[in-house]
Length: 96
Image 1 (tube, rainbow, N blue to C red):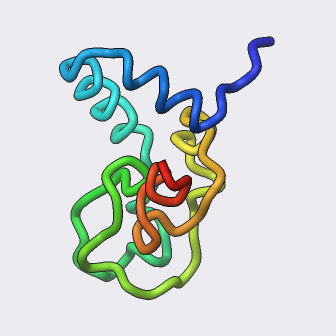
Image 2 (cartoon, rainbow, N blue to C red):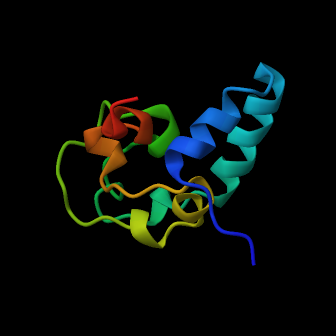
C-alpha cells in the first residue's frame, strides 16, 4: 500500500503542475468537500467550500464544531489542522 503524502509534499507536487491541472484538481476536491455538513458552517449563509485550499471564510466566525478530520479532502491532501474556515488554508496554517 502506498504511503499518503504529507501536506507539504502535496503542495510541492501541485506547484509542478499547470494552472489548468490545478483548476481541475480543485474542482475534484470541491466535490469531495464536506464543509456544508459542518456545525460551524450550517446556518451562516456561507456558500463557499474547500476552505482548506481557498482560505478563511469572510462569514464564518464562530467555532461550533469541525468536520475537517472526517473529510476525504483531509486525507487526500495530508492535512492535519482544523477550522480552515476560521483559521485559514492548510498553507496558511503550515506557514507556507
